[in-house]
Each structure stands twice: as C-alpha cells, then as structure tokens.
Image (cartoon, rainbow, N blue to C red; front, top):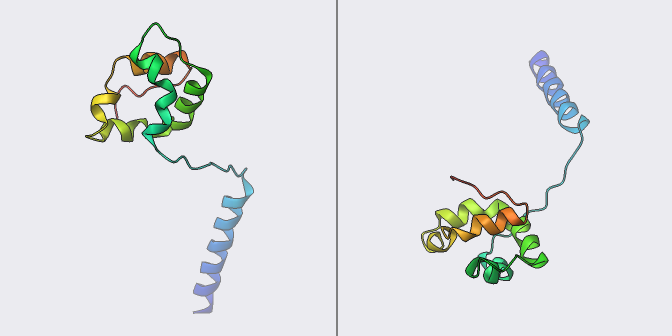
Length: 99
C-alpha cells in the first residue's frame, strides 16, 4: 500500500515538474460579440472603402470567434458576405475558409 501511494505521489510531482518547467503563456479570453465588428461596417458594405484601424483592431480581437459566428444561424447570412474575407485580409487577419 505504501509503495502504491509513493508511486502516485511521485507521478503527481513528475507531472507538476513537466507542467511548470516550461514557459507559461497567459492567454486573455476573448468575449465573442459580433457588435464589436461594427467599425468594419463601412468597409464591408462599401468595398472601395478601406478598413479603418479600429476595424482591423476589432477583427484581430474577434478572430477566434469567426467560426462561432459563421455557425450561428442568425449571423451566418452576414458572415457569408464575400467582402468580409477581403476586409480581414486587408487587415492581415486570416478568415477561416471552413469551420
């Protein structure tokens, strides 16, 4: 019994060393809110209008949410606008071809 407990403790310590020995990276959680993309409305609806700095900033911030927006039945019709990938590309933001 003592050997088994010792083995479990050893495994837990080894796991802790592996987990905490590497670089830790803090990732800030993104709140997915499609209204945050409103600064991009002009660039999306008028293709000749370049995206603003505020638009590009919001696209970068909301990028992890794109697939969720595309899969949402109420947002899908808006996210399938062919100008959105163009605006995203202009901002250097990857737009997912498929989700």
